[in-house]
Image 1: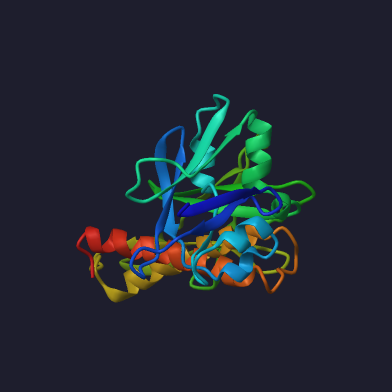
Image 2: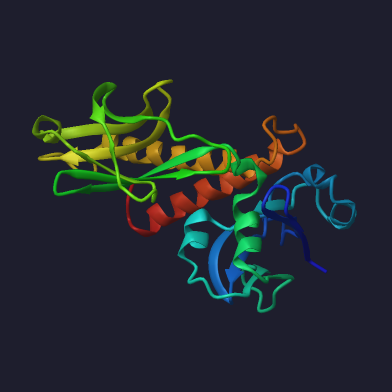
Amino acid sequence: MNAAAELDPRSGTFRGWAAPAGGVPAWVSLRIDGEPVWQLPASGPVTALLGHPALFEGAPDPHCAFSLRIPRRVADALPGAVPVACSLRRAGDDADFFRHRFATLRELKNFTEGAAMAGTVSVEIGGLRQGILHGTARIEAGAVLPDMAVCIDGAELGPVEMAAGGSGAFRFEMPAEALDDGLRMIEVVAKDSGRVLARHPLVAGRVDPEHLLVELASLRAEVDELRRALFRAGAEPALPASERPLLLAELIGHVETMLAARDAAGKP
């Protein structure tokens, strides 16, 4: 056996190990109904698997563990047909080493969102179209949606307009002066606390798209999304110390995937 995994409903992850090949960490691919949707390297410390004795005892290397979840964007895009078959496979192999079938959409939703989502609010900015900023606020069980405002470079522009019907969709008409040439960082904040709920870089007018500041702004927004994903991943408010190394390895896997995609696109 060169890989093994278990389902961890508490944290909404597939956890396990994959043996390295020639000292190089193996990559583990998540597949849904046979189609690959995400992958990351199995390079975390196996001590993070102490809560899964069978996995911990079978691990062949001190740094071959992984923790992998179904990306929220993938779960949201599923067509709604059940059951949903999930499997794990070492990159380059022809056979799965782990399979699980979610019989109902509720079971899948409980797994992808998990206990960590209770009482939280997550905001996603969809983009700017014809001068209108669009986005969505997700409200999990026990949470109260705060009044939200749009800021640019720290200056508040005004409150967002929520759509009727409780869908969580919102819009904001950007003032003309906010669309001047240059790079700006749009922020959606909670008015009561000032906490930043989402960020989105705004490039308007004549700005070199390869400018370093544009790249940094985009990366900052991406890292914010990773941070929110990791925050949702922990099933308890205080993340146990034993969990942190594996979550860190997962974050590194996300970053490595981002950088590989940028290299493939020919960007610096």
